[in-house]
Amino acid sequence: MSLTAIKNLLFDSFEVSKVLIIAPLRVAKVTWPSEIEKWEHLDIINYSLAIGSKEERLKALKTKADIYLINRENIDWLINKSGLVFDYDMVVIDELSSFKSHRSKRFKSLMKVRPKVKRMVGLTGTPSSNGLMDLWAEFRILDMGERLGRFIGQYRETYFKPDKRNGAIVYSYKPLAFAEDAIYEKISDITVSMKSEDYLDMPVLITNELIVHLSEKEREVYETLRKELVVSIKDKEIDAINAAALSNKLLQMASGAVYDEDKNFIQVHDRKLDALEDLIEGANGKPVLVAYWFKHDLERIKNRFDVRELKTSKDIKDWNEGNISVGLIHPQSAGHGLNLQAGGSTLIWFSLTWSLELYQQTNARIYRQGQNETVVIHHIIAKGTIDENVIKALNKKNVGQEELLEAVKARLEKGDL
Image 1: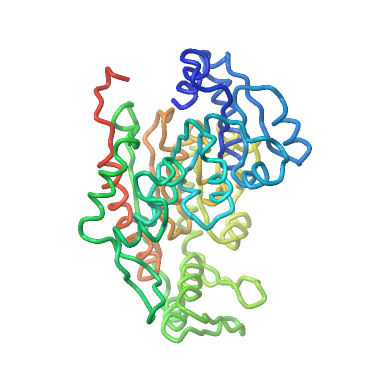
Image 2: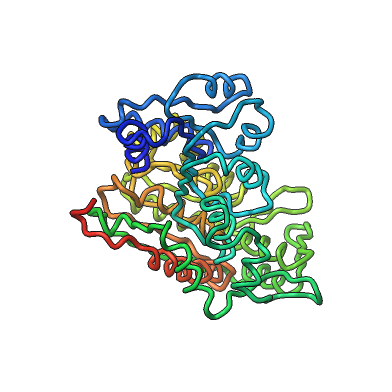
């Protein structure tokens, strides 16, 4: 849809002449070019891919084209170090949520040239995965502060109150009673939420929680760490210095292994590996995608099953052509923008993440336009562990984000599209 709009602006209404698309690395490298080449009505568009070494990027940016594609990590370089004039009159940010930190280099760099851009478009399926505070930086880029204010302090004072604090130091903020509705109203004129299921004939989505049970001995090890912050496993001492470290260690342990101070992992149980084996066998030869979080998950899964990581363009192509029976992805590297729906319709969460954004974006790799089969998303949950807290938190966070998306939902009839 974005490419069709760009085509119209370039060649029908002549409102823009040079477009920059900013996206996650693999999305810029694989997804956008394949979409341009896929649709016949876009064959008029010339694009240049500014990815690779400094020399390759400079050559691509100096090549005459309608659209320039660059990964978000190189925005600071493009604006502050490339030596090139920033003369793009339209910018599209794929995964606007990756600019939600007003302290990041990419945000500050883009804000330097924002006044030069006539049209700024942000695309994301997870605009407020960590709450309403995420929205300020995203909309500061879109409208230069017109709706939610030019300064983060102003935004905080207007819509939030201090929540967790230690004396004068505030660690988190809580929205005021009126904030949610007021913010949605402020941004509604430039924000459109369109869900695939509202406009497309999407397949059925089934989510499932597969519960595994630790043995008495395994549970004793887990509970000792949880209560004492230290436990001895196979003559190795595992400790957690604070709550964040404890949360991480407990998640590892629920998954089946835990790292010691030398960064070596110690196996605790195989419950999730056994469950994964059952799910793979139950797929009866159909391809399955497995999402993992820890490196020891990857190693243990590889040791037990014939699997392939989806890391390169070739891996993604082979997956979508049905040449991989068990594919492995990490949410941080495959959570945004990749089209994996052609290769399978089953996703298994071997270990979970606290990040709603990465969780939802990873699910959207297979549950998206072009998927023709019922999508099944399995979650392997260790009973009585932090896994249960994570899945509950993800469901709770999703409620808040769903309210935002519903508030700015496009009120269109299908015939209007």
